[in-house]
Image 1 (cartoon, chains in turn yellow, purple, orange):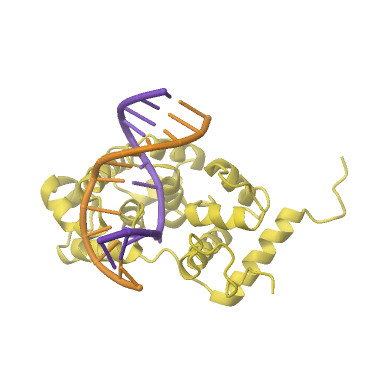
Image 2: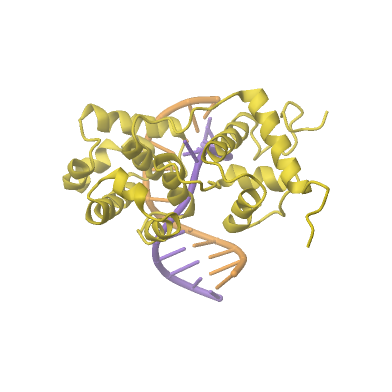
Length: 221
DNA sequence: GACCAGGCACATC
DNA sequence: GATGTGCATGGT
């Protein structure tokens, strides 16, 4: 079938949103971490938690010179939980971190390059099989630590998309992810910036309590 | 003092 | 498959 001469409306709208967000906020320089390993640790610690609290936990780990897969894996649970305490849910996150570290060490010798060389789809499945790593955490690791072209969906993304008529309310993770991957160029840098900008918009404009803020750069004036 | 934040697993129906 | 609940800190 011949391609339509008219642009796909969803693709068009997604591109407009991106342009407006980028013009308003500029580049976000994500992920805010020094190394890919730090991204992976941060991706687990930030689950349902304010990033500022995660930064405190990561600072504790860095100060103790423990931002290393083997060192962290050997650390007793209580000590690890104590160090990551500011990030909240510290007992559960200490366990999740250990689960991930075991996987990372046993399957990839704690080597980012080995992990990056793995097929993206297969690696995603592997990550999802680790207890404590769900879709958002897996995708954050794939995109921000390993430069894989995977779109990260979070609560802000779903909220913004439903508020702007791109998805119905209650759309699944897969539906939301597909919206972006099927309507945008498969580009790591674009996916990186787009997700970061959506988070920035969500944070700055309190989307939970104010569905249509007049100041929001996406609100039609 | 209440509400919220860059989720996830598990139990129950 | 859908829904409810526990996990916890720190900022506003």
